[in-house]
Image (cartoon, rainbow, N blue to C red):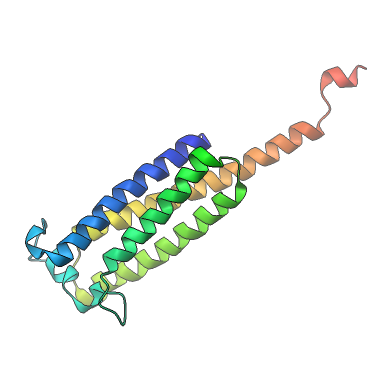
Length: 165
């Protein structure tokens, strides 16, 4: 996969995740806007109105953290796509940020399944986007390593034209 296409995909996924997270923040203030099941195991209302739907020790909805996470992800993807496509540090930053994101997802999924015994479909969509972004970041990071090694091998290997001189 070309690095620029990968960064574009990360940027688009960031926008999708940002939209869902912003919707969840909106729903926090206007629960009538919630479009999701509110009974059974898939119960967005139960998840989003629980005490676990807030940053621990605050009244800040977890969805705000999603907004921040996706804004940062989008900015990094845009920089790596359009501004500094050759900066290796951006790939490292993206991968580290994606790992932080997936660790948060694992904690939140644990809360949903084990503690709340309910799943929020919108939250699951955000979790799937973050997982996809992590996998894409791993692919971009490992492919870049392989590409750099390949370029080094080509530079170190004498060409046929220089061997005949």
